[in-house]
Image (cartoon, rainbow, N blue to C red):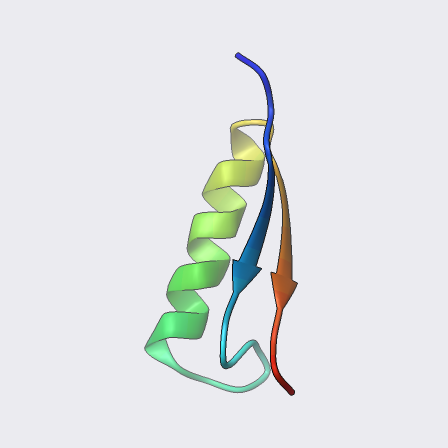
Length: 44
């Protein structure tokens, strides 16, 4: 399986708390466990 480079756009990222931020982190961790590379972009 080839790995992907994934750029995730999120409004909030920890230490800011939101359900969406925690789900984005969880998704990124799971994707990394499968060998993909993830990065985040936030409008902060």
